[in-house]
Amino acid sequence: MAIEPTRRRTQTPLAITVVGAGILGLWQALTLSRAGYAVRLIEKSATPFTGSASRFAGAMLAPGCESETDPAIRHMGARGLALWRAVYPHLINAGSLVVAAARDSAEATRFARATDPPQTLDARGIAALEPDLAERFPRGFFFPDEAHMETPHALSFLLDAVRLAGATVELGAAWVAPSASDIVIDCRGMAAAHELPDLRGVRGERLVVRTNEIHLARPVRLLHPRHPLYVVPWGDGQLLVGATVIESEDTGAITVRSALELLGTAFALHPAFGEAEIIDTGAGVRPAFPDNMPRIEIRDGGARIFVNGAHRNGFLLAPVLAEAVADHIANQTLHPLLVTSERLAHDGHSV
Ligand SMILES: Cc1cc2nc3c(=O)[nH]c(=O)nc-3n(C[C@H](O)[C@H](O)[C@H](O)COP(=O)(O)OP(=O)(O)OC[C@H]3O[C@@H](n4cnc5c(N)ncnc54)[C@H](O)[C@@H]3O)c2cc1C
Image 1 (cartoon, protein in one colour):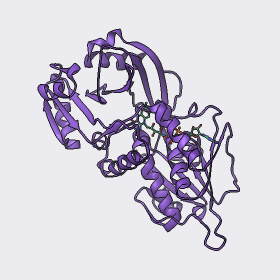
Image 2 (spheres, helix red, strand yellow):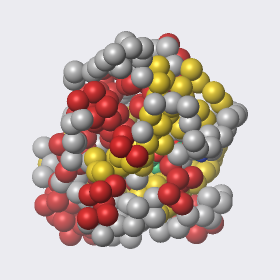
Image 3 (cartoon, protein in one colour):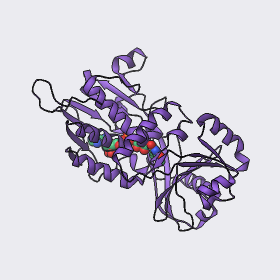
Image 4 (cartoon, protein in one colour):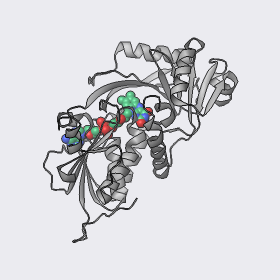
C-alpha cells in the first residue's frame, strides 16, 4: 500500500476526522494514523463503545461460513483476517466448527453447497475437535483458517492502539458538520441513516452465559432451518450465545421470545446450558444496505467519506474497508466496495 500522507506542496500531514469509535471507525483511525495522517477520532459516548452496535458482536472472523450469504465475503474476508493477524496478537486462531442435528441434514447439505467447507466431519471428527460435543451430531464442517476474539478486549485494545499510533481521541463529543479537517470519514453507523437513504437496521440479540460444564475451543455454529445459533467461547467459562437477525431498528433489550429461542437452541447444542448462569444480555442494530455488503461512499470530491453498512461482517471487513480508504486517499484507487455519489446517482439511488 503506497500512502502519501502529506500535502505535496506544504508537506504538512492531511488532517482527517474519523467520526464514531465503533469497529469501523477504530480501524479507519488506526490505519490512517499508522500511515502518517493527522487523525482525530470523535466518539459521542463518554464511555467508549456504550453507543455502538459493535460491543454486542460475536466478533467471529468467519469468511468461509459467512460466504453462505455472499461469495464475495470469502475473498475480502481472507484479507480482513490477515490484517487482524498483523495487528491483534490476542486473536484466537482455532477455526470454526459447524454442526447439524440428524433431522436437519437438508440444512447441512444446503450450507455445504453454499460454502464449500474445507473439511467435512463425521461424529468422530467432531468429537476429536470438541470432545464436549461427542456423539451429539452426525455431521459437521470445519473451517480451520477462521478466528475469533473476546469482543470487549478487542475493542479496548484497538482504542489503545489508535492512541499509541498518534491519533487524538475525543470521547463524549458528538460531531456536527462542517469540520475544519481536510477529510471527514463518517463511521456513525445507524446515526448516519438520515444521510444514507438506503441504510436499514437489522437487530441482533445475544446473551453471555457462564458455566464450567461446557468447554469449547472455537466458535460452534448450529445449523437450523428457523433458529440457527452460534456459541463463541470467551475464556473463564464465559460463552456468547447469539444471535437473532430481525428486520428491525429497535434498540430495546432482548425479548422473551428471542431469549427462549436462543437458549432453547443452546440447550439442544448441549444440555449443560440448562445450568449456566446468564451474566449479560443485549441487542445491537447492525447497519445494512440492501445488498447486505458494506459501502465506502465518496462525497464532496473526497472531503466526506461514509463507511457504513457492514451488517453481519463489521469485524471481519473493518480492516479491508480501512485499507481501501487509505489507498483511495493516497492513490485515488477504486476498491469494489467504494462508490462515488455520481455512480450512485447513475444507478438510481437518491444521494
Ligand atoms: C449480535 C451481533 C453479532 C455480530 N457478530 C458479528 C461477528 O461475529 N463478526 C462480524 O464481523 N460482525 C458481527 N456483527 C456485526 C458488527 O457488529 C457490525 O457490522 C458493526 O458493529 C458495525 O460497526 P460500525 O462501526 O459501523 O457501527 P457502531 O458499532 O454502531 O459504531 C458507530 C459509533 O458512532 C458513534 N456516533 C454516532 N453518532 C455520532 C456523532 N454524531 N458523533 C460522534 N460519534 C457518533 C456511536 O456512538 C458509535 O459508537 C454482529 C452484530 C451484532 C449486533
